[in-house]
Image (tube, rainbow, N blue to C red; front, side, top):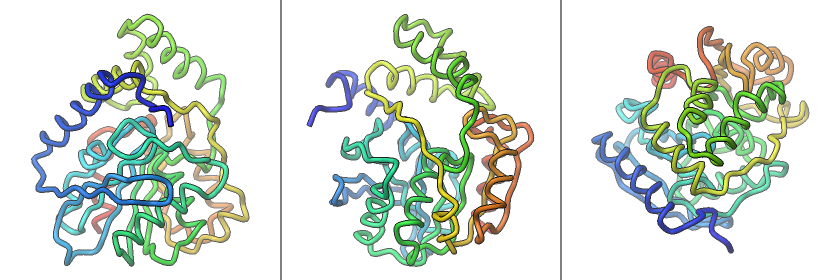
Length: 284
C-alpha cells in the first residue's frame, strides 16, 4: 500500500511536531499500539485505570496530542484514551476507511473491545464527531455518553463558501508555499490564532495526501437508532458545519439528544475559553 506521506522526510517532520506537542503537554502518558481489523491504531493513555474511561477523537488532519491539549484536565476525572485516527498525519496505520459505510464504527468498536473498555464516554471534534456517530450506529452497547463539538456528519455548510474560504487558500498554499494563503485558511476556520496549527498544517498540506471526499450526513433512521445520550456543541460562525442549521436538524432526528449548546462567537475551531467550558461539561 502506498504511503499517505509523500516522502519520508515529510513524515519525519510531521511526526517531530507531533512529539514536540506531546512533550510540551508534560503529561504522564503511556502509549499502546492496537491491532484492529482495519490497521494498527496508536493510542495515548493518561490517568488512573480506576477512573471511568474517556475516549478523545481528534479532527481531520490532526493527531491525539491536539485532542489532549484541547481538554488538558479531563484526566483528573477519567482515564483518557486519545486515539490517533487512521489515515491521518499521525502514528496510526494509513488505511483510509469509507465514510459512507460503517467502517469507522467497526474500527472504533474494535479499539474499544481490544482495550477491554465498557461504560465509555466519548468526546470528539469535527471529523471525530463522525467517527463517534458511526461508532454508535454500529454498536453503542459499551458507550455511556458522548460529547460532539462542531461535528461532521450532521449537516454541511455552503460548498461555495467552503471552496473560496477553505479549499482555494489551501490549494494556493500547496502550490506557492506562501504562508499568506495558509493564514487565510486558518482565519476562516480558527476562532483564535494557533501557532501549532500553523506549523503543523504547513507541513501536512505539503507532505500528506489529504482526503477531499465529500462528507456524508447521517440519515434520520440512523439517528433514530441511537439511544446513547448526546451533548452537541455547535459553533455559530462555523462555515463547515453551521451551528444553527446543525442544532435545528439534531433536534429533529436524535431522540437521545441530551443538551445542545451554540457557541455564539465561535468559528469551526474553538478558542481556549470555549474549550475550557466544553471540558467542564465533560467533567460534570
